Length: 253
Image 1 (cartoon, one colour):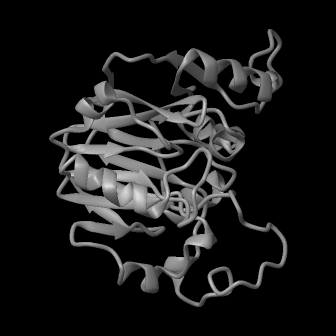
Image 2 (spheres, helix red, strand yellow; image 1 turned 90 degrees about the vertical axis):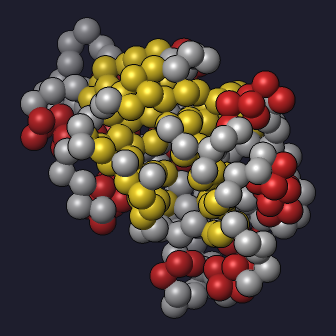
């Protein structure tokens, strides 16, 4: 299994227009972050976690030519807004794409993309096959996926564990029973928005502490806002076994 970071950034705290801060104007490609998403590639196909507003470009940049499924962590716009662009895969694969999401996220998806679920479907709309997930493991492309419920302030968000790899974004609290599902992971991806306290995201300090608490050998930090600082400068501060993820980073599991 190969995991590629399609995006490691966030809309949170980032001015959309003409930001001239040192991160947004950096010439280091590791500071140029699209919205957070990963690609999981196996011999049986490709799985994407979240269809961000950058989904189309992420797929082009990663040269993804086939897509078997999408896992949705939660229904905030920066994690589902690009779903319309699965149409290209529908066209070439001549079939619907399986979208795995909780019932709550499904309701939002059906509201936001209502035209994809009408009785009369206009030609060319995205073909979406919604599959409901809860707290039970499920199978996708030959992989066993274990959902991990975390809290994004008061909103439940799904993290996912596949074998020794765990991916969690948009969280600031994980209950003890959910932490047990993470124990034994060799790689943990965890959100670290910024240094200052935030109502719904782990800070850099909190993410580092959680990685140590869970005794995961390698932690990658994602969902990074420009408020955290430059990639190379922040990397110097991190303890062994913790690293900033960056767009295009690929790891073998």
